[in-house]
Image (cartoon, rainbow over all chains, first blue to last red):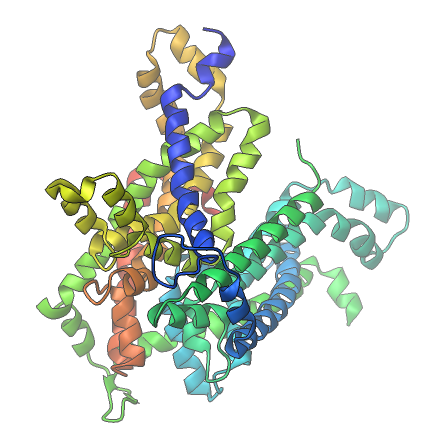
Length: 262
Length: 295
């Protein structure tokens, strides 16, 4: 037995891994498969059709929900990325009063169950007299996204070599120039993955959105949920399949954009 | 003005963090404090909140009628966590031990479903576990549905049973477990295992004495990341458990939407928070704190 073989996964472990990946992907496979099924209810594939995709494109409520979802996700991502990046730099570089409190507060959204955050915001918006709608959803999404942006950008800052910035300053660049020309490009991968995380969290969120949405501000997850509660048609499969496709393309693109590590 | 900011580094840090802190205090801490206040109040006759200071809501929660909901929720969340450890550990171990060039692909495959919407993941299992779903069709085709054992097995995981809820929860949270597990297993130095083998330890013993203790931070971080959302989950029981499975998350949601008893719902969410914190604390105190909690 050579060194390599001692640490390589054995036969049983490999078999288990294959089974585990099947467990992860078979449900998705069937989900996509049935989106092309001519039969509405049967699990037997009776024929192939694109009818459900057509239905989807003619569904005005879906388009409205998609628009709402994108408005919320884009706005909250831009805001939480800028604010969160600033906070990450502040926490990484400086010492100030209340730093411990700030760090503790940043962990709250990670440890609070989402349903609690949802009802707290619902009660709060009612108390201050804010009408529920897209703005309240955006406020909520920013609140739960910021900590994830801060954590991601901070991880990047911790791995960064400060001497490059010091060199720039020694060569006469002021702080503003140093930030735009040196610091920001260096932490950009962290900022981008923070933004991607915030964007996905926003797209994905059902629970907090449920409590902060009002009439007319239905997002895609809210719409999907009510479709699952009512009569389920292959239209949901078509919608899900398109969603998976979009995420897959986005993930592959982001992998391409990331610089190769190690 | 700009000059004073630049001269005092402590102020600069404060300026950079203040928008974030404003947002989190205004839309997280203050609303949470409001829930604490409301939880001691009472429901008015129109579903409004009457501010009092009574413990009635909390007393009601531990009654026989609602007490079992708290118990069931904790139990299902713990089962989900244990099932995720058992199912996720071998897979994370496999990925960490496979050839370095394949590792990122294997992790990518774990993450793809995780990045798609979680309602879609639930729906995928609804199709499989439905009465006339994929699992039933496959088991019928294999001739298993003619046997009483096959029928019993199917009835345990069929849609709208507690078993289906567990299947859905595990599928939902498995990536949260695999991610930190993989991180801690990948860092593990193979030469430690070689040393154990050279000293005569059989692989199984080397695993128990070397690999497992060193991956403990990953197990703990993963458990926290699974247990907390599992405790408050109401969507999976809603869609996969039918009306039979009511967890504390469902209770809270119902108090805010259908029953319109906000004080009772607030008290329930306070108890949910307390339960989550207590279990997490016991867990971290017993096994040490998970360093890899940071996502």
